[in-house]
Image (cartoon, rainbow, N blue to C red; front, top):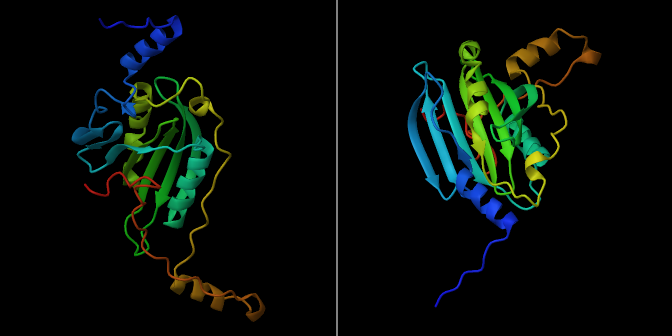
Length: 230
C-alpha cells in the first residue's frame, strides 16, 4: 500500500504558489497591449518568446534566456548595454521598473542611426533577472513613432508576471545596476576628415573610421531587435 508523507505548512504554501504562478514559466502575459497582434508564441519549459506587431511596424517582443549561477541584474545589464553599444546603439535613458508580481527590473532606452544614413530608430529593452531566467521585453520601431507607443511598456509592466524566483535567494529583489553608458558614436570618415582639415595642424585629429553596420545582437548574450524579423 502506498503511503504519502504530509507536506509541512511552508512546503504546502510554496507548492500552491508554484501552481498558481507557473514555476516552469519564465513569464506570463495574458493579452497583447491594445493595438498589437500576436505574431508568434513559443514556450518550451520556460524557454519562451512572444512576438507582437503593430500596424505601423513597431515590434514588441518578450524573450527569455536561461540564467546561470552568479548572474544578477547588474551583471547582465552591464553585458546588455556594452554589447548593444558596440553595435552602434546609444543609451539615452535608464530607469528602475517592477513587474506585476514584484520582480525588480531595469528599463534601457536606446537610439540607433544606421551607418548608411538610414532612418533613425528607437529600441527599448526592459531586463528582468531571476534565479532561473533572464527575461527581456523589447520595443522597437522608427524614432518618430516612439511617442505614440510610450504607454505600451507601462501596460506590459502592469500585467507581466516574471517566473523563476527562489525564496531562498535574493536575485529577484537585488540591487539595481549603477548608471551605465554607451560610447559616443564616431563620426563617419568623410565628416571627421573635413573637421580635421579645418583645425590647425597641431590640433588635427586622425579621421574616425567608418562605423560598420550594426549586426543583430547575439540571441544568447543580448536581445534581438524587436522588429528585426518582421
